[in-house]
Length: 435
Image (cartoon, rainbow, N blue to C red; front, top):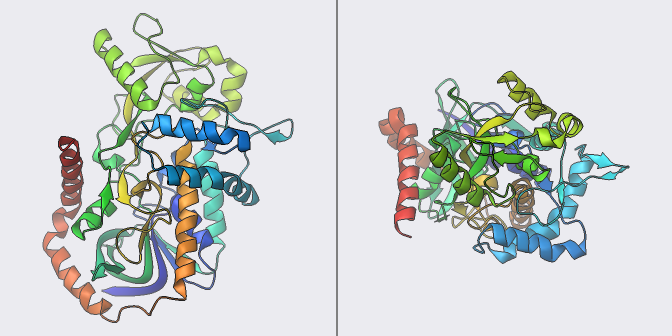
């Protein structure tokens, strides 16, 4: 079995993993691995935008909008950190070359569901791709970072509640042991556990299953957000998301009779319930979304990729209503972390959708996800940097522990992926039943 030794291991190459890598001190070696291709993360799929505190007068409104969407189950400290950090994050993204929309030379802001005012920066309808691609370019230019694709984490190597690294499997099916002083899980969401999801199918919550097996605390893993509007299709595979900003700009929802039946900018969970109720009344597997009211200019300038994708399915959104249906979209729960993204295991951090720092509460406010991921990924990297000098050397027993773990993995590897899926789904159901 091949072995690698690194200072920092980051499992995942989405926005949070990349931003963490960019903030690790350059004198430390960073190894990043990803289960699929480097661009196959949900960060690349995010359409709507990224929230930002516009000015000090916006603080109370931003806080209340986030808490209200989250049914006041949010961790206020985390929300405060996110909001207060937002201007610096946006400034840094612009320095990396992120091209946010501008109006008369100034940053342009849009509004989405449950926001009381426009505070969302965007790049057409592919904000996630714009941000994540620029972060990836910056990371690839770093001499201290190595990225490995098609490498799947199988299990964690730990001793006395301290993470020492992981055992993984390469594209060729070979085992790979990775020893690291610090490990960051940035493995994304759980969409691959569901039949209808906007997520990549390989995102199956492996880090949650690994965490559970090693006694790492989880939090609110039954808090799963359904996006109310994805393009209805009978084709198998990932559902195409119709961004919330479409409704924020004024698109309307109609029932089978062509009548409006809900406030289009309700929080996602409430609007999803309204749509599901209407589908039942209509006896249809979808409702209609009318983008034509936005006008051709707005559609082609602000939502060109939605326009093109719908055209591929036979719908011209400048002229036609489109059928939409709710689908699994985002995971508010995850591995419990503190305000520095540290888990309950030593030397183990979790960021992005994999983690639960309490920002989102029971329901995520639109466009808070990219911001939250970046803010708390940076905090993880900074915390590691601060602790580095005071921590001891790597555990000498890693090779022996790796061999023991490999023996256990080999006995169940054939069905390990399905086992992990069932363990995560089972824990989600137990959480639901307990409430």
